[in-house]
Every structure is written in structure tokens, then in C-alpha cells.
Image 1: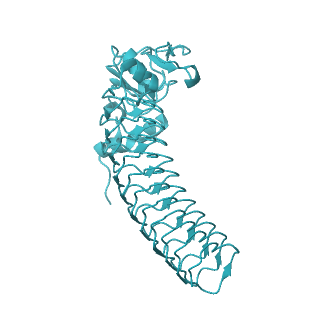
Image 2: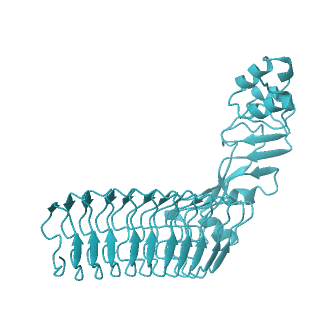
Image 3: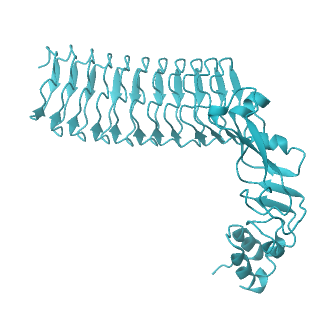
Length: 397
């Protein structure tokens, strides 16, 4: 049976939550004695009593504004709410973290490391202090005050930071940035070049909505999902590769990407939300991975050039308007896993000439194949068909 040596015990103890855990470890055996003395920083929040257990710490870590800092105060930038924000106005204020705290014990440290989130205004205000901030957000107000070049120590770009920057053509995002907030680059109509590094883990909703000049974008490998309207109305976007880290495509994610010709959906994607590819007028073909179990409302609505689509057997349900107005779709095979064809599912598929419906389908809802004038071949089992399901389809047999 293997045992931990003193070094590995210290590694384990970094994950302790209370001072009691550290004290108890000291009494386990002789080789674990004085484990606390090996620390040159505090692995847990301290107060004037517990700090005495760590006699050799040189660096103080803070996880909350309420953590004891032993007189090593600094100021925090507080921004006013968006409805009070005006470019160029004084929309911020500063507060000292020690303002409401009574310091019982003062102690000097080589460095203060702050883990709670702050904006870049806080970093700039404390630039001459021995304070390092680990979670820094570059906000909309910061951009107006400090410019469009994102500082290297920023770890997140805030909601609406570059919103409606009509003249912004390109942006360099530092490697420390892990997330981009909601509607961050919304309506940046001149933005044509953006490089998202592989270290990024989150893209917010409406992140690049209406970036009409953006022609290509590489989604970082660590991003788990593309959220609501993430790349909506990016009318110049022609091709997109989705990494295998992505498991879901949000509602209206690519809505109105009129130049998008092809998209590679990896097998990691298990959910494609409603209107995800709606109005992608140039999309010619798409392969739905076998990990997807349903196609939501209007998923490929108005994909006018979509001529081929493969629906895997993993799909058990099609929602309303799923392939509505797919004018170039000539044939479709419904998998045996599907039990019902919904309302307006293939409405106005002008080129649709052949449909194979399996015996698993037990109902076809109203207007499912309405306005499919070239539908001439239809293989259909004995099932319940709603009135008007095939209105204005004169050629089917």
C-alpha cells in the first residue's frame, strides 16, 4: 500500500477548506508535522487569529472583498448602471475595501493576490500598489476611457463592451481572455477580422450579432456551446468549422447568415435549437450528426439553396416549420425513428419531388407539405393525415 510523502501531502492540503483541516493534518504523523510552515501564501482566507498558524507567508491571497487583508487596503472601481451611463461622463466611483472593516492586526506582505472579479478601472487605479488582480473584466466604460486596445492582464470582455462600434475593423484579443460577454461585438458592422485564441472558454449570447463584414471565424476548441444569436445576421460569413468541444447550438445561432455555404457539425453536438440556421440562403448541404435527437422549430427555415439533407436515425422528432421554404430541397427520407410529421414542416419546398415516409409515422399534421407543387412521388403508410396536409399539391401519387 502506497503512502503520501510530505511533499505530496502539501499538494493535497492546498485543497483544504478550513483551518481545522490543516491543524488535524499536523497530528497524523511526524512527517506531516510543520506542513503549515511550508506555505509562503495562504491557501484559505485568514483572520487575525488563524494567520498565526501560517508564520512564513509572504503573499496574501484574497477571494472576497470581505476577506481580512490586515491593513493592506486598496480601492475598487464601481461603475454605475447602464441607464446612467453616458460616454465621456463621470459614470464611476471608487470604494476602499477596508471602508467598513475594523483592522485588528496589521501585517505587511510582499504581494496581495486578488481572486474576486474587478473591472479594469480597479487595476489602473491600483497600478502603483503591490496588488495583482487575477479576474479582470474590460467593460464598456473601460473601453471609452482607456481605448479599444484590450490590456494584456484582462481575463474577460464585458457585456456590450464594443457594442455598435461601427468603425471597428479588427480586434486583437489577448491570450489571458477566457470569456467574451453577451452582445460584446453587437452591430460592429465593419468588424472583418477577429482572432479567438484556443484559451477561450465562453462566447456570450449575441456575441457577434449583426457583424455584417465578418467573413470567417474560428471557434476555439474549449468553447462548450454557441449561445443565442451568437453569430446571427453575420451576412458575410461564408464558412464555419465547429470544434468537437461544442455540444449545443443555441436558438437563432446562425439566423440570417446569408453567405454561409457550408458548416461542419461535429458528432459532439447533441442539440440544435430553434431557427438555428433559419434564413441561411446560401447553405447548400448539411449533415446532421447521429448525436442529435430532435430538430427544433424552424431549424432550417428559408434555407433556399439547401438541396440535400441527411436526417440520421437518431432523430425522433421534427418540429414545426423545420424545413419550411427550402426551395431547392428535391428529396427527403424520413427515418423510421420519427413517429409524426409536424405542422408546416416542408411548407413551400418548391423543388421537393420525392418523399419516403416510413411506417413508424402515425400522423401528418396540417400544412405539412403545403405548397409543394412538384411533389409527384410519395411513399406513405396507412396513417392518420390531417386535412390540408397536402393543400395545393396536384402532382403527387
